[in-house]
Image 1: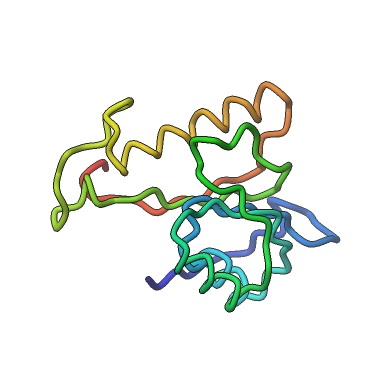
Image 2: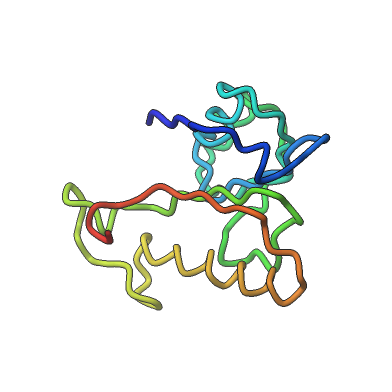
Length: 141
């Protein structure tokens, strides 16, 4: 995965402190790595990952970060400036099973709806992230 951030984000955030970030479906931390490579000062407030090998790799690459665990059991996101997420694509990928991502379909790709749930909760508590970033899938464009 090659993630590159382009442009000047300082007008969006007007920050004198580090950008607070949470990374859902974090894998080994592609978004955290993109922030680091683009010299964007940030603090990882949490990740959500269940794969034990990805969690260990994340720790090796980015240090020990609070893992919120299984996204279906997360009640609330930490208050952050930036929400990054990349839901599993196995059920919507042309190379995958093509089972879809319909709400309540119990496919791995349908976990994307959990992000919506968490954003609604954040909005209700007036703690929406200032910005959210996700990867895109050709199949849902």
